Amino acid sequence: MSFEDALLNIANRVQDYAGSLETEEATKNAIIMPFIQSVLGYDVFNPDEVVPEFIADVGSRKAEKIDYAIKREESIQILVEAKKIGEPLSLEHASQLVRYFSVSNARIGVLTNGRYWQFYTDLDKPNIMDSRPFLRLDLMNVDTYILPELKKLTKATFDLDSVLTAAEELKYVSSTRTEIAQAFSDPDADFVQLFARRVYDGALTAKMRDFFQGVVEKACRQFLAEQVNERLKNALAESTSVSTGSENEVSRVDVDVEDKKDGIVTTEEERQAYMIVRAIVAAEIPLERIVDRDTKSYFGVLVDNSNRKPVCRFHFNGKSKKYLGLLDEHKAETRHEIERLEDIYQYAEQLREAACRYR
Image (cartoon, rainbow, N blue to C red; front, side):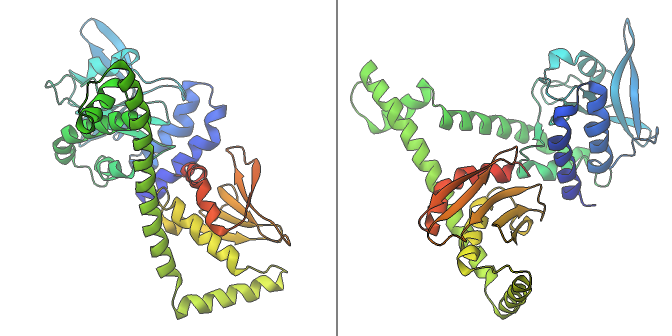
């Protein structure tokens, strides 16, 4: 299993089991140990690689335990402190990890509740674990930009020097992205004033500040929408290019013939709608993971060819009306009438949200 497939598998476990994991031990068994085993590649049943309940004596504090210590060449390299899924992650509640980090050989400290994984090192002061992680992973919303750095911590490609070299930039890029996202979604007074002073020469009275609050919020939404639309256009062009050619045409005919045997006829309209949805969700999910499945009742768009991972459904078999079916996290479907295929773009945000559940 590849690194990416292993990560996807654990993400699916989080989605499937999160509601039934009521204790820290259950979270360890269902999510954290499988992550260490299949994603990071360390044998959790080999005490020369992974030591559970690692005893960490620090000064007068005896027999304190770290949930997992990961070893390489008989030296501890990574310490992992686990919490129950759903619990907030705070270093105030991970005192053993912070204390033992300072007296061990480990250069990487990990705090996790199964879904969220925070990776720390000692950038600010030697042997003192930083208060901010240099790498954050959310298994329900995986940031593909961090995957190369996460992969450096795996057993197969462990490269501590490279991780530490990139850690400082990662730490501040991650924090800055968080601040940018916050500023765009809910601009504060400083952000509004920054742009107001660049486009308005008059005095920023209380009335004008209120006015520019709305202006900046609207400008942010329009800018983000333009960026998304540009990506959609590029993805659609790429998808259309991939779908052309004699080989694909032969394949399409074969599929249609087989479909007709089962009483299923895939229309050109359904195919075009499918390509639109692929273009929309391409920003969240690799194109090769998006597949179609036509049935007698509806045309479905799925992730990983799994009925458990629906993105949407097309109900185009009616004589006069067409419907786009959107499904929530409980697989409950809501139908939206559309007049033209282009109307699907009106639901781009909902479609991307659906795809994000399976990242």
